[in-house]
Image (cartoon, rainbow, N blue to C red; front, side, top):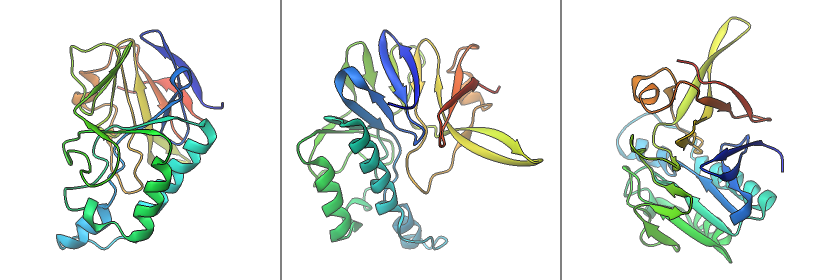
Length: 220
């Protein structure tokens, strides 16, 4: 399938332009930081009103990747919901769509710092998951190796016709892979930030998302 093919700890992986990760050998699809219900949380807390379509839009993109990859296992790598109340704010259509995506698949919710995993929705809820040679967790651990994580929403600052913009990206080196945020309403952390340069090796790549996943040296 199209995407950027690379190896981490001996596992052959594919970074998709959508921001999801596919592990063909395991028929496993992984996404991070969907932050479902962010527009609802902002409204509840008196913040700016955003169009309330982000849940369906995010889930439709996830559905497209599931259908494309024929994934039998789906890992949601933490912060799947924007807070603890966002899960119960889903409307009937959104819950129905999520239930349809889960049907017939192994579905794993990894605990994030925004949410412990939705307790009233189907699937398995774990703090982290090891499928050798990889370990899936939300927040990277500096000493880890063979790690697939999220949390930081990495982005690369770029320029087009003299105008700066940020492009979500994967970050990968010999020890770990950090996924971009998959959610529609998510900010990001520049790859030049101390948090990311302190985690990633000097030879790390940034894999840009978009119509075609494209690797470049990680900007520092």
